[in-house]
Length: 116
Figure (cartoon, rainbow, N blue to C red):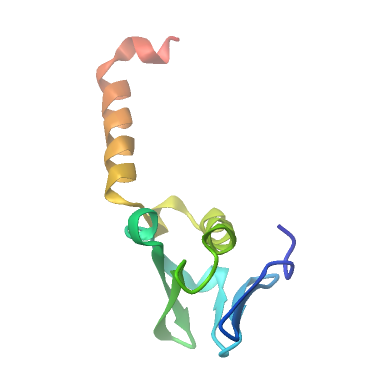
């Protein structure tokens, strides 16, 4: 996705990707480097993800909500943000966490899986 090419418009408001993050029609800007946590626990079931970030030393929050914006488009912005973050800053839905934990535990228990 090219920076600045994604602009979502809904109910006279918009969210747009910039070269370094996201900006909105109501003046909120999130720089990818300032994100402290991306919480996707409710994304799969409810279409809500929360981004915690720092702005001028203060904690702020940005909410991705597929009720306000078309899910595919807002999901693409969410994926773009996630791709910019280290894995330890992303909170996945419970099912994704348990699947990841299960596959790690399976490969740790099965020494032959490394030889395949």
